Structures are given as structure tokens and as C-alpha cells.
Image 1: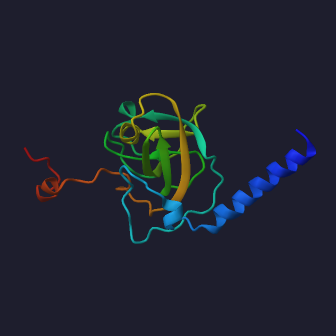
Image 2 (image 1 turned 180 degrees about the vertical axis):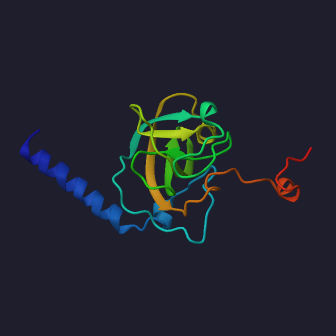
Image 3 (image 1 turned 90 degrees about the vertical axis):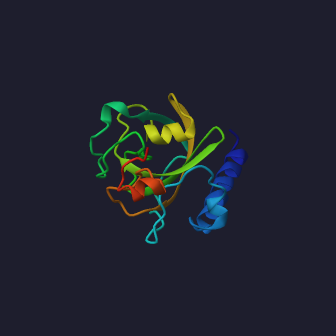
Amino acid sequence: MTPMSKKSTILLALTAAVMAAAIPANSALAAGSAGGASAPASPTTTPAKRTAVRPSGIATWFGPGFYGQKTACGQTLTPGVIGVANRTLPCGTLVRVTYSSHTLTIPVLDRGPYSFADWDLTAGAASALGITETVRIRTRVVGRAPNSPALGAPVLAPTAILAGGAQAG
């Protein structure tokens, strides 16, 4: 690489970083069109602390062997839980994940993955994104939600709420 092209690359990267930092994480420009399902919103949702996260990475998914167990953040894993495991991001960090033409905003619920991958999706998140194998995904930290045992849990249908959580039918 020539010294001039190296300077141009560094200048371009610095310009992009300054522009990205100027857009608040919860603005319409930063939010874009999320599409798909999102993590439950909360009036106390706060911007995430700036953490270095690569814009793309390898994702795996986990599920059946872990159902009924608690995640590192306190949620009980079920097939419907939508979340992601990451080694460094705090519990409740909201991450926008894009795969193919699907985009989903999901909370960090667990630690891991403990393999070559960068992200470990729950079976519910993988299903919503159309992922059935190890894939490359695009990611962006978009905020933070308070961690709670219900974070990432599927939203009950109105008939289930009226039935006290039991499925009608």
C-alpha cells in the first residue's frame, strides 16, 4: 500500500467514525427500518455504553439442550426466547442483527459463544432471522434495556393473557 493510499484510508475511517458518533443511537437516522420483531421496549431504555463491536461476525445458535436452564443474565431459556449471547456486551444491550433480508433487534441475554463464533443466537432469534446453520451476520449496538427475567421472552397473545398465561384451545 502506498503512503498516500494509507493516509486516504485512515482519513476515510476517521471521517466515518466522527460522523457515526454524531448521530445519537436512538435517532431516526441511526434506527433505520428495523423490520421484523424487536426486543420489548421500555420507558427506561437507555443508550448503550460505547463498546467495540465489529459490524459483522460469525453467528451460531443454541437451543434444545439448554431449554429450562438459566442464562447468565437470569432468563429461563425456552424455544420462544429471543436473544443473543456475547462475550463482552452487558446484559440488556440491544443489538440490531441483520441476516439476508431479515433484521431483528435483540437483547444480550447470555455469555458466549465459547467457540470460534462471535455471536450465539437463541433458537427463537435464529428462527426469526431464517438462520439454520453457522452464518455471517451484520450487527450494530442500538441501545440498552433494563435486564429482567422476562427480557427476550415471547409476548403472550391477548387470549393467553386473559387465560392467565395458558394457551387457549
